[in-house]
Amino acid sequence: MGNTEDALGVPCARTAAGKGKEAMTKDDKRIIRIFDTTLRDGEQAPGCSMNHQEKLEVALALEALRVDTIEAGFAIASPGDFESVRQIAKQVRDVRIASLARAVPADIQRAWEALRGAQAPVIHVFLATSPIHMEYKLKMTADQVFERAREMVALAASLAPEVEFSAEDASRSDWDFLCKVYGAVLAAGAATINIPDTVGYASPEEFGAMVAYVMKNTPGIEKAVVSVHCHNDLGLAVANSLAAVRAGASQIECTINGLGERAGNASLEEVAMALKTRTEYFGCDTNLDTRRIYRTSRLVSAVTGAPVQINKAVVGQNAFAHEAGIHQHGVMANALTYEIMSPESIGVPRKNMVLGKHSGRHAFEQRIQDMGFQTTREELDVLFARFKELADRKRTVTDRDIEALMGVGVAEDKPGLYKLERFVINSGNTITATATVRLLREGVPVEQVATGDGPVDAMFTAINRIVGVKFTLTDYTLRAVTEATDAQGEATVKIRRDAGIFNGRGISTDVLEATAKAYVNAINHMLETKE
Image (tube, rainbow, N blue to C red; front, side, top):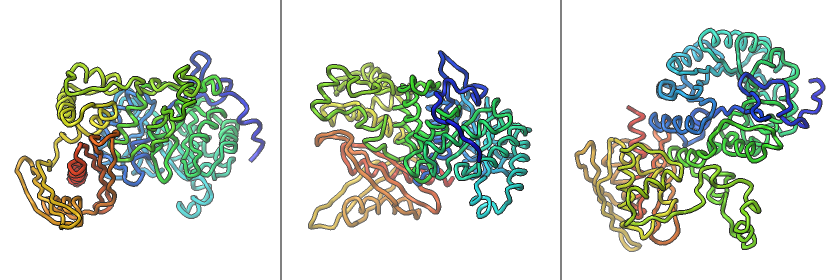
């Protein structure tokens, strides 16, 4: 594979090769492009599917975050994926919109059909190059893979103004073969070549060395954007991505909260804040408005039903929490003693304002703006009404309560086939639980009574009788949003029908009401997707 030389010892600000057409210097720093694939690879994580409206909402948040490219989906995968890509391409204008395509004509044509309306469309073509993939999955020789890659990139370049090519499983491929394939696709019209660690196999040192080798030995690469796409199977996705940047890569492909296939992808918030916090070491930065990271993280968690672990780097609940007395004393004296970045830098207000039932609309609106949320006038009306209802039930309403309202409150009032109107539960440890549930089906009340093994089982059984559609409950979780006995309960439900998994969330100071809302919300998602 040749001499790799010193791949990691060169600060990326000094790396001459492979800067890419847009990774230009700014204040002596290279700007690393952020390619967000939350809506494609992130949504492929089991149980993290999103409907059209949710995908559009996430895409608009990513646009506000100022990512450079949004991979909106895999257009040929399903009619739903195609329509989501098409709608995002039409409505999200200030960012590149990409669609994934296998190296076959039908995929590429379908991707272009979905992307036609985009301001800056990108067809993202991929083909495996590792020996194990070529032999067992593709059943193609290396020569056949080489020709297919070149021909399909040429086809994509005849349709779209920008083409990216990914050599799937690059980290287990022969380096010289990679250089040969990348050189051919660049000559055929690709503007970006992507070096994926598809199965999370690489270590930072060897991955950085491979990137450096490809950049040194691929003809035409000096005019290209060099991208990396790392998976987290060994927990090294972020480390591998940063090693690639040190070796000269000019684009990182990542997802919000690190969502993705299996153990997930490189986490956008982690790579972005690493580059920002250690800019003197990496000599690089991004175009991101990092103050929108926290809000975007919570939005993605809300629409996918995938909670953020409490000790998650950058965006976890404990990321800026200090329990030990010596830490608390240090932070009070100077925050830099134990905080290498500020909460405000990712959009978390340091001051936690407490609101109550006497707080007015202006104070509520100002607080959600301070927290980095943006709402329409209609959404604000709904949220303020829910805030007042909550304030009547709770003595104080904290930022975490407001986050929960923002994540669930508007969604509960969005049109759906069913809406919870009321329920009555009779339960105890010496009687059979009974639930009477009334739903509104397009405004018409429908009521059923059922018994069950506990109040939740009885309630779900009654709702199932109203809906009359077979599906399976796959997951149900309940957590307190804040401390104390008057805390809101946040319920998350996942249901499965055929191959589809659908999420629902609900909040209330009554945990059974939160549970019923989440269940109905999941059912509405399922029925909407079917239609």
